[in-house]
Length: 207
Image (tube, rainbow, N blue to C red; front, side):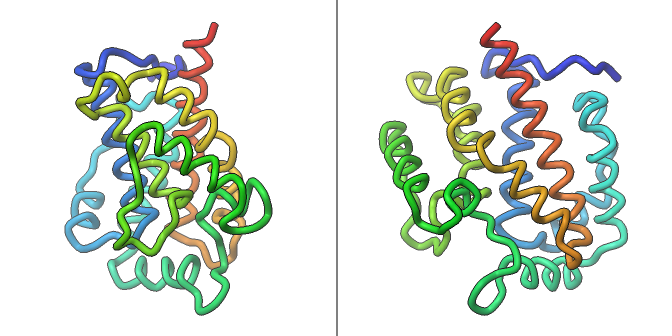
């Protein structure tokens, strides 16, 4: 496997589809514990050769964690980490890592940028827009969406630099350091590695 950072290509390219799917998978794992269907798919998943050496080990760690987990154990762990009564053990919101508080200025800036992209939160959702799953879904849309005026590499770069790279690794470190994290420690490790690969790819665009 090559150590070369991910190189972005045209939106119809298989690499771009893979990027969008990866963001989608991570968003799904962070918004709620996996259900039986997703667990079955992860149990049967093969090593991701196209991910390159940077992601090979954390991907395998995720698969190994899933094979020793169940829907019930994942739900228990997710609830304990992110759904605690009152204050959760780990906050999955960008404002907390950028300002030390929830619903602060970073969320205002995010909402402004989402408005410029023509995007908004579903009012039926309890989570604010700076939830890690929400920003990953935005990245997935900017990669795979049909509106070329919005869904392009420059939009991806700006959004990633402002609303993903600035805090997601700190969030992953908080999850990995928590003594109650087991399977989600592997999810955090994979997420952190993927964000680093994406950052390298955007660095190459700017050189």
